[in-house]
Length: 70
Image 1 (spheres, one colour):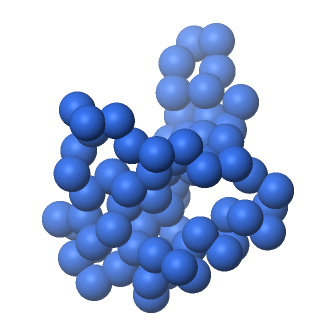
Image 2: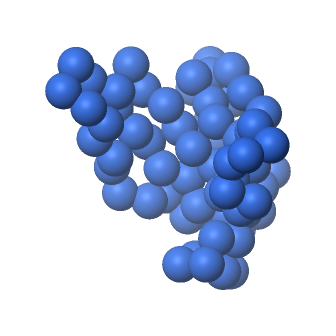
Image 3: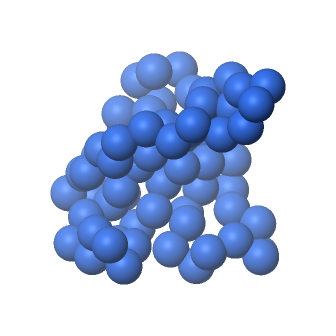
């Protein structure tokens, strides 16, 4: 399964919206490289074009984490 995590201006990319694909496999998680966008809207548009569904963040998640797409 693929998950796409969306962070708005995280500490390691303070000028971007950062998106990272994570593969969920039997033996654990395999994160891929970051994809950087100029805005949250640009990132959302790119993920929506892939036919993915947005899931909001949970209260206990990192504050920079905006949402996850499946």
